[in-house]
Image (cartoon, rainbow, N blue to C red; front, side, top):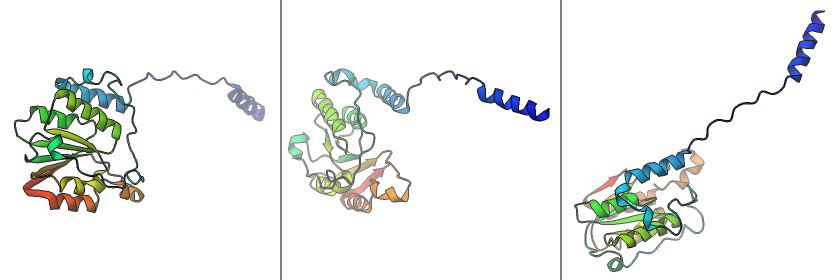
Length: 205
């Protein structure tokens, strides 16, 4: 009798209809929230109307492989007289400048007379940011598509003015040992920064 009751209960459990769970309310992903937050932070730049043809938000890979064959060759320096109005001013370099809004804001609002150079490994971001620079008529900031780890020395060593500040904001730490080789902060880059910084120069993280 006990066995029959147990068997009946098991059959009922097996045949019980699946419970439908209510789909969770859709929320913005972290990338969308991050982009909107950046827009609000730099709202005074009013950059949205300056890139109407391709839209404001770019669909890009968040990470690229810096060891790819297309990134291992050093990028040569620009003609500094062409990209900066005064190439003898102290230089700030932002490695991994991303969207470039940080440097554009500094170039437009800082009271200190400096030139600003952004190095970014994602070409679409560089193209958009350089478009903004041209539209805003800024002659003290420039962006380059380059792998800073292998190109920093060749680019910065040719600059005629002093290298005053290098910023590396939010670099990917690549915690796994097998991915350490993908870190932007390699010995090669650190040595080059140390060698090229002027007396009293700084590095900001």
